[in-house]
Length: 284
Image (spheres, rainbow, N blue to C red):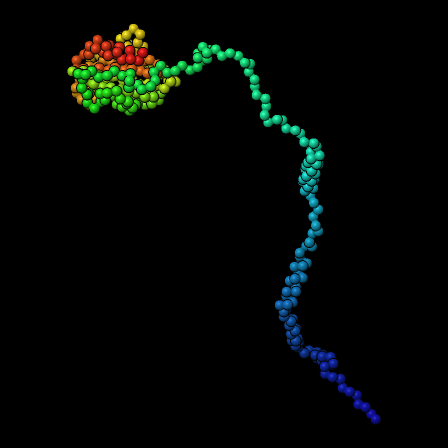
């Protein structure tokens, strides 16, 4: 049986060779590359990032500063514990007694004279000052609304009698003013005011200061003060009515006595001296 040769397949056959002199034909276009999927892109980015990231470092060793601080802390704690253990094992130290022996003084006899001399001296004048004031004459009358019987007065009332009311009020209250009494009366053309001003025991020098600072004539040999009579007229506050003044002042202990006389003509020195002397005698 005769077998015919099998013809080769067109697929397996090589491409035909163009004849000589034939024009070049365009070759077939290359096949397009397959598109990259999102999964592929993510895997590629992960691989690139992993290649760019450096490997993680190993654990760091403690620095010398930390070791030094740790050693100091442990040393302090250990030293405190050792010191506490040593102190706890020591016997307690007894405390000194709370009550000590009282000082003792040698016994001796007390001299009454020495004790009296060392004691503070009593006030020269104390008690109700109103009982020490002169009384108004029977023929006299009240002078305006001033007290015509011995009465207590305040520092403000005393200051109102002066032309420098605010200054006198401050002076009295800052220089140991304690209390004062006063009596006023009017007789004929004369107006009389008698005052007793007492200072605190530690400000007796302020009482003496009221009697100083101006030349005074003595009205009694034993009196600590004097008197003065004005030869020129003055004027009552807020009026044009003239008056002549005369006053006497003296100090005994913490008490200052003041006697003032006002008249429409110059006051007789004898009238003023008589009033001042009688008031002084009531203080001694």
